[in-house]
Image: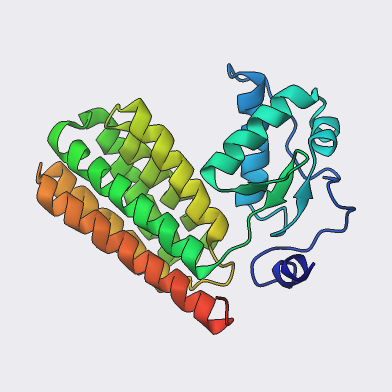
Length: 248
């Protein structure tokens, strides 16, 4: 299992001590939000993968996940199909699957999709975004700069996610929101743990503010360019992190 040994080396993921397919308390318990059971299972497993609680190559079985979450295998099976569709797991021939393994090609493909989607988000937000929602988006952009200057990497990560998701929500396009959510999760799962922080986070936060300046001005072309430039630079920093560790 070369992939699992590499992925558990600490470059991308924390090692976990468990038998294949056994989650051992990693997943958040299913909550009472107004979602279908399969949606809640999906959200729990997705969060664990994005937060690097599972190492790349970790086998996930329907039986193990169902036992951990206290549900039947049916919603787990449905959730695993969706996780495979997004690209977070690779489906197994006998059900379940394995957590995807980061590669340069996977990272490049994911950012190609995300850049196209979020450039469109920026255009729509500039032309017809809900003003009150855009004010909230700007607050996240401002907060991302404040926490980045303090060197708070986790605070920056949270505000970065809120910024991108909030901007998308301001378009009031539900289809675009689902696609952006999936692409954001995939690039987050592919992100190298040791990718540069400050001062790169400060530069990234400045780009958030530049995007908002274009959106607030109603300049859809400038908003498109600002978003593409931002994500292109983030992609390059991730590629540089891969290069430092010889990841193909």
